[in-house]
Image (cartoon, rainbow, N blue to C red; front, side, top):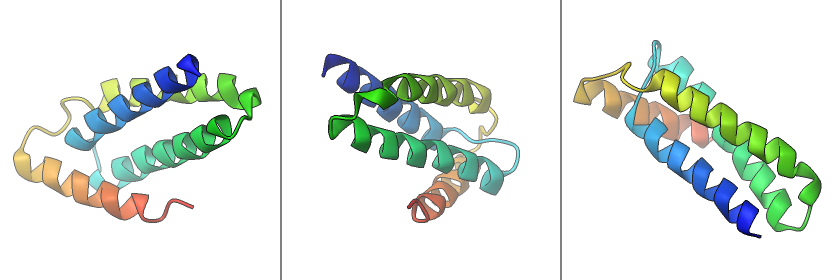
Length: 97
């Protein structure tokens, strides 16, 4: 359970970082982030439901999210670009199934 909470915390941290940073194309980067977050949500639902077989996959996804976070950090510095990214991310997260 401790591992689950650690992974969930790492994903939540990465999500927070990513919503305040952007990338080359706002829409494209928002879609990439949303896809990672959707995958993370699905995996966390399975783990919390008792499916521990996806723990390794969860760890890998967390690592990918951290890498993307570092890649996107600092790409957008203006407040307007950060706001556009946050809006695009919310829109893409709405498509999460």
